[in-house]
Amino acid sequence: MTDVNIKLAKVRQFHLFERETLREAGVAVTAVSRHVVAGVVFENPLAGKGAASAEDLDRMAEISLELGAELSRRALARMTDVGRPRAYGKAVIVGTDGDAEHGAALIHPRIGLAMRRTLGAGPALIPGNAKVAGPGASIDLIFGGAEDAWDYDAMDATTVSIPGGPGPGEIALFVGFGTVRANARIQGASADQVANLVAEIRGATA
Image (cartoon, rainbow, N blue to C red; front, top):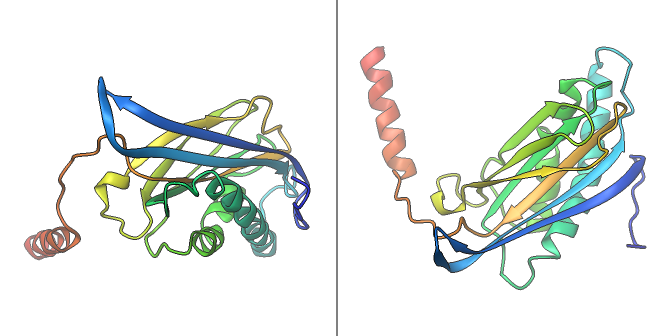
């Protein structure tokens, strides 16, 4: 794509993962079940430098905002025919010369802003997953409801990995969007019911 304008990160590769489920447990799906994850491999500017300072972690958060917008754009471009996605998630694999906190800085403070802006929705907390691992390692990207964290039909996961990435001095960052789980039919408690139950538990243990 010739219109990529990444200023803060030294990007080596972009990747796109798409899963569309047509049948589950031998039964045709009743609604479109598509999940798309966009990934990027880029140089870790903090690799091999020891414990990161607050300023270093702020820099990583700014990188996540820029990359998060590009990844969201790429993923959502594959979902224009299914309406606005109901689910989203994020994940990161930090190469072995990095630190788990580098990954936390990328997926927790700022990237959600880029995802929500691009999606045009999303007050709900975005599930995130992070690990330190070598090239080719896999990670589960967890999906949760974009508008409602208690949207059970939106809860799902997909496993992604990049051959040869991330290298020791690199990071692989992933952003995903989805519709619904294939043939989702679990009926759970509402947010109000859970809140009442938690209040009862706290009252009983006070």
